[in-house]
Every structure is written in C-alpha cells, then in structure tokens.
Length: 106
Image 1 (cartoon, helix red, strand yellow):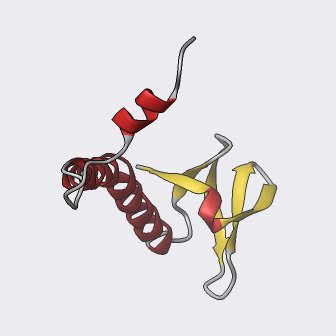
Image 2 (cartoon, helix red, strand yellow):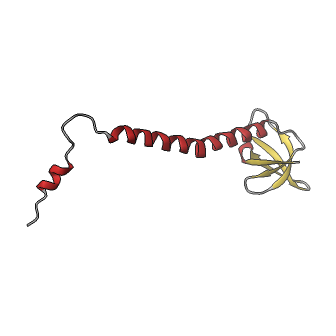
Image 3 (cartoon, helix red, strand yellow):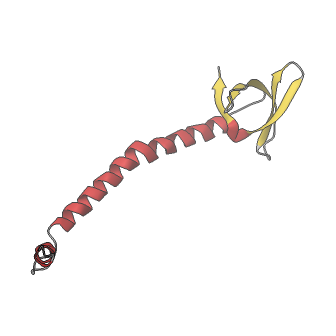
C-alpha cells in the first residue's frame, strides 16, 4: 500500500530559515509588472493624453470623425458642456459628446 506520509515530509520546508526561492519570485513578479506597465498601461496613458489634447484644441469648422465612424463638421462648441453640435449632412445637425470624437480630419 502506498503512503502519503513520506511524500509530505519531502515537501516540508527545510529547517534553516528563509526559503531561497522567495527572492527569485519577488524579482520575477516585479519584472512581470514592469513589462505589463510598459507594454500596456503606458501606451494607453499616452493615447488618452493625446485624445484629451485633440478635444481641447477643437474649433468651430473643424472636420472630425466620431467613434461610430460618422464624419462631420463642428457647427457649435460649448466650453461649459461636454458636447458639440456636429453637421453630418446639409441641414442635419446632431449633438454628440466630446469624448466620442476620435480623430481630427485635416
């Protein structure tokens, strides 16, 4: 018959203090965090900053594209509100949130 007791004794930590692999694990997790930060978080922060600068620089008459792919020209901009009026066709004006404007067409 097989016994688990010898296996459990073999898995027990040694008498002597710290586990030698603990520092290696901390270095591994730290490096994974740094890689994640520089490959995922940092580019998203840069993109969000560029988006905010683009929205702040919009003026009446600028041609923009929305997140839904609607192309139009800004007819009215409100500084105290979070939306603009966008003309998408002749005499067709819609209100849209500023954060949905994704690109400035040059």
